[in-house]
Length: 557
Image 1 (cartoon, one colour):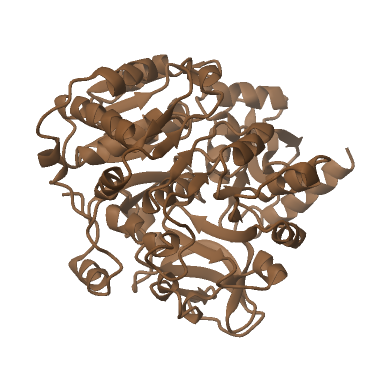
Image 2: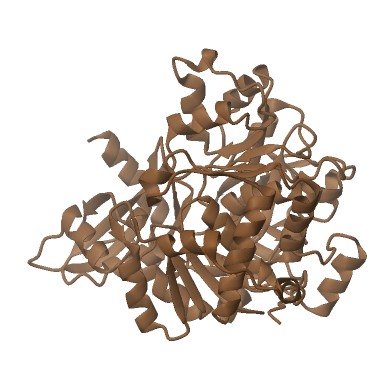
């Protein structure tokens, strides 16, 4: 069994009622039995442009048939208990079927962004040793099937590559096995359900394993029919435009859909006007978007004529939201929500039942143990610590947020050194984000301690970019920093020191990144050529100085 928690942790969370040992597939099956004819999932309207097939709307009964057929295929190809299915797909009904079918087979799934190439995929395969790789044929002009063939050749653990066109046929026509219920019975709530990937200070992505029980804990946040403070009602319509590959897409999209037996409206890649159209036409009740998107919607010349009468909660994440957007949303009868979270299974949530004041809600988060009347928050433990590990409680204090909860992963998957650096002796995960103690009930995000760049909701490791760039034959030294961007939050900026007698341009760097097989969103978009990278006496790059300088350079043109 791939069970990563110690018996003491399992016993504690089960005894306290936070974990119920129900798998995500079992929760989905309950929904199918209660509401077989309800619309379960809706394809993006532009599906044909993305993958060549017309968009569909599936009922719970129809989606259940899809995942039964795909699960039968996976079992016939050796995917069973503890096997890993690696998936690189856009947000379509087939991706949802891949999640459900993998769980149906008692296996676990690891979804990765469409932008990842051989550089990232090689690391993923070394860590996971997947048995099946499901991917697109082509997407946005890139040949994923060809890349998958090369990856299969390099990693013998991959016994089968399934392209999108094959997946499409399997979901509709594959013979259903008679022993599916027996196969599903081997999974427990403590087994891994999903391994997500994140970037931080490390040069390679980190594998974040979350169990069925981890995800199941989110029922206390989303299931408003059974739990006080729950956000959603039975049958609510949910749309999250983020790729369903990490905490944003899964934890604030896929999981709430399962918890409320709702309708999941899919969208990908992000297109603002299409997103707004879906919000209105599909009668969406719950959605999430980056602050820049919310600002663009509210400032649009036609904003006053757009009707969002069905929308209950509009969550913002990935960057601090402007307080005025909360006021404007509330004036329209929509509850604004502020979310901070990570793929490791951390999460802070400000909404009407935790912080009623709108301006304060936009700027801060509740200290969980101060929200005693809502079950979800009672299970979360946090502390803010200084460099020595001493806890800080005085208003105005700034330190690293440490987090422990039934949602938080116990370790990085097959990456023990990373685990050792990230968890303390009491099992608290050190988030790498700095928070300020506002008062005795709230805290506020202050800054990132980790050296990462967040571009359009994706974490980009500065160290990873620097490692690749330094392999360029003309590069002597390099340092990557975030460049502020109104639409994406940040872009990747690069300071580079050429070797004597050579030159290095932005185009040189882009070509090198492409030849190295690096995802496009990690490519530098601004290059500053310097004689040397500034460092402190012990050799650490002065990133704060570089970030400030690059902003000044951009302003000066």
